[in-house]
Structure formats: C-alpha cells, structure tokens
Image 1 (spheres, one colour):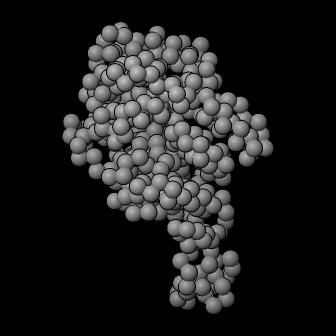
Image 2: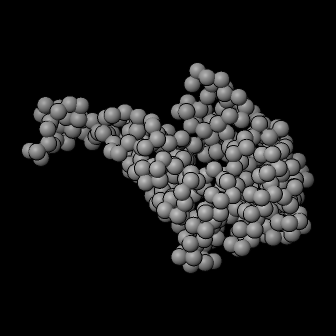
Image 3: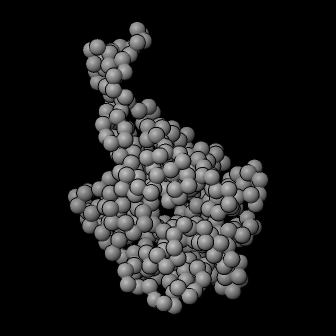
Length: 380
C-alpha cells in the first residue's frame, strides 16, 4: 500500500500565516521520516468564512516544501487548471520538477466552488457545467501537448496558441520553421524547460463519480484521485476506469490500478477520544459544502442506497457508519483500510488531516500513530 498525505491546514484565521507555513515544513519533514511517498497541497481562494483553508498556490507551496525535504514527492490536489493559463501551469510544473530533482506529481481538477472559479476565469463559471468541463479538458490537453512535443500549436474553443497574426520584429531572431513562417508570423510554440521527468511527471485527476470525468482521465493516461465513498459505491467507478484505461493504453488495467482515495483522517489512542476530538470540526466542514445534504449523501452512497435513517444522522455519524472517514484508534483505521483493500483493491491511500478545530499538536500525534501503528499493520 502506498501512503501519501496532504499537509495540515488550520481553517482561516486560527494562526498567523508565518506559523502555518512553518508547520507545513515540520509536517512534511515528519511525513518523509515516517515513510510517506508524497505530500499533497490543495488550492483554494477567497475563503473569508474560515472553511476549507489552504494555500491559493500549491505549486509555490510545493517549492517551499521541497527546500526543506530531500526525498518525499510533491503533488497538488489539485491545481485548478481552468482558472490558470495552461501554458503557465506547464511552465511552472516543469520548472518545479527541475527544482525538486524530479519529485513532482501533477494533480489537476476542475474546482468545486464557484465563488472563486467564476471570479478568476469567467469561462470556468460552474453554473455552466458543460462549458467549465470543456475548458478543463482543453487546458489539460494543452499542458500535455506542451510537454510532449518539441513545438506545437493549438486551436480550440478557448485557446488559440500562438495568438494568430503576430509577427516577429526582432532582427536577431532567425525566422525558421517550425516556429515561424517565412514572413515572420509566429506559428508554433516551444515550452522551456521541459520537465525533468520524461515525458512529464505522473498525472492525477481529481474526480467524483462523474463517468465523463473518469473516462476523460483514463483517455489521457491520468491516474484518478477520489474523495472517500463506500466500497460498494466506488467499485463500478473504478471498474469503469480500469476498462477505459485498458482500452486507451492497450494494456490490462486491473481494479484499483491507477486509483487512490483521499480520506479525512484523525487517529487517537482510543476510538472515544478520536470521535470526541473530530466530530464538531468534521460537521463544521461538511456544513460548508454548497450542496443539499440529501443530494450529497445520495451521491456518496450511489443510486438507491440512501435510507431514511441516513438523513437523521449528523455528518460525522453518517461518514463513520459508511466507512468513509478514517477516524478512530489505530486498529479501527487499519481495519477500515483493509476493508477497502478487500473490496476494491485499494493500493494508494491519501490522508487528508485538515479536520477543522484540530490543532497542530493533535495533527502530529495522529500522524505519528498513522505512521507507526497503522502503516506497519497494512504493509507487514
């Protein structure tokens, strides 16, 4: 089993940013010492209300963590590529790959909060889901093309690269193909530098249960990162991914291959202590998700699986009942991970430790228990 982790983020305003950044470094060093494979950093903007706090720039944060570690791989969970220019993402990730000695994992996503998606790029406005998804797909295609090809051009719904009609005026530039036409029109772009890892860092796409997202990831050779859902709900999605990835690659992908799950995680010496510490913060976090509770829970469980009693539970008890939250004693969490191993061949676990209201000391204690008491049980 591969074990990764996000960094631990306080929700906005609890600690000064200088303290938050220093704690990030301490946490990443601990991940490295405990044998985690990768540290992931998410991207959020404009969270003035204190929910889902993290950095607005995961790539820049990765660079800071890289300077304080030597082995652990560094990922983004995700870069919300519809709100970035794809060529800037391609350049920044390629440069980060060189700065880290080839330690980058490239994570992409569409974004899930229109408060900031629509503000940073009107084309990413999620009130038009189809248009936002098309922008995401085109952006990833441009990034991959920029890395894989010596020079390239692109004409799509959202981007034309290079911008048509631009002619070189610098007399010191050789007007040679493939970059220029004889009259000096700029017609092909070369990204520099290319990533250190060739042809590029491993690509991960954050997905929900949307078949088109899963199929797109598989068609582009991207692994998938999933939010936690019950085993029975995830199995058809992972089978779809295995089927489509096999078709796209010409290789045989088995259930669970190329798939990971990000679990909210908090471990204490006893189940009772873990539940007491995590309940209020988890309920606070879920209350900030802008989706009706009945619709969200139905989507989590899959078609026809939502029972009346599920609507009577608070968010914490609902998640615990269905095995989606890794909160408990070390033995509790090891048992839950084993259930996912047995049910869908989970082989890539991603911890998400940022449950609101927990402090850094609690997060570090939980991490130590995960690394010393849970991981050895799974990877014995």
